[in-house]
Amino acid sequence: MILVTGGTGLVGSHLLFKLVSDNENVRAIYRREKTLKRVEHVFSYFTDEPETLFERIDWVEADLNDIPKLQHAFIGITHVYHCAAFVSFEPDKYKLLRKINIEGTANIVNLCISHSIKKLCYVSSIAALGHTEDENELINENTPWNPEEDNNVYRITKYGAELEVWRGTQEGLNAVIVNPGVVLGAGHWNGGSSGHLFRLIYDGMKYYVKGVVGYVDVFDVVHIMHGLMKSDIKNQGYILISENLSFKEFQYKVASYLNVNPPKKEAKLWLLNIGWRLDWLNHKLLGKRRTLSKQTAKSAVSITKYDNSKIKKALNFDFKTIDDSIDEVCSLFIKDLRA
Image (cartoon, rainbow, N blue to C red; front, side, top):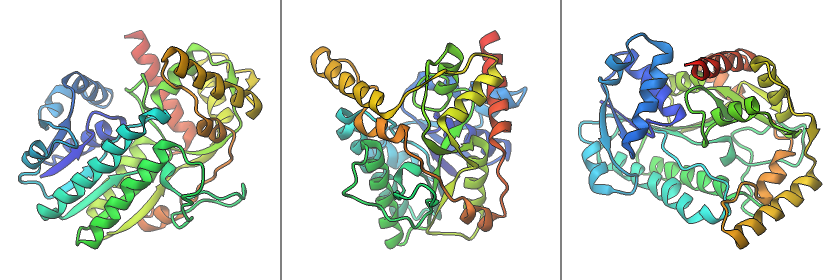
């Protein structure tokens, strides 16, 4: 049987659809019952029988730091997809990020070892990769991590989680790590995933930024994860991106498919630097949640390009174009608006 953590998230819900559609025996972990409806909704995009597929999943309520419940979830499991994570760039959430992303992953790794799991697939992020100062140099799986760099809190904890997985491989666990870029997929339109970007652009964003990052379709991520788990490949990490695009290009493409006006003004670094300072003051004086940090302001204008050649060669994989992905996600977004 296969265990999926983070099954109610963007990658997890699409992975579950793939697995149950292939008639795999699947158990999935969830934390809040209300999030289960999102999974069934995602299923409804791709099948006329979402309830039937949804009911094939053995759902278990558990937290990544609740060892007794996790022990129960691991009974009879042979393979694990660890998709669960906490995504936040708020500096004051660092302790919670460590608790979920690093300590939670350590718990999953330890249970994989103690239960003699055949293989673990961990969903990391391009955020956990090293960086380079040369804007023309592609970042790959071997680009060194610099602990002295001013890394944001999410990056730090995803990198720490990867170290736990690599520690597990030293203790005999077979594992693969995937590092997706910005994952484009439907059904998660509010916060925490790229779906929120589609909603923001539809509602009318005023500013664009010229930073560059890698993007990938959610089903490309799912198919690669599944392919790696079925293969003999072990103890390797892979960057998963289809294309490197500027945020401006992405915003304009989405606006075009949604038939709305794109942002007209550029948010330059000096404006973002003012913004994160005001954001910090609002947090300190008024207790408001952080929406912009020093690190995210810098990354918004940074040019970071990624090399996807390793995974393309390993699985002979061809990525979906980002235009096709945006087209499909926008169509489903509009469908939900009209429902």
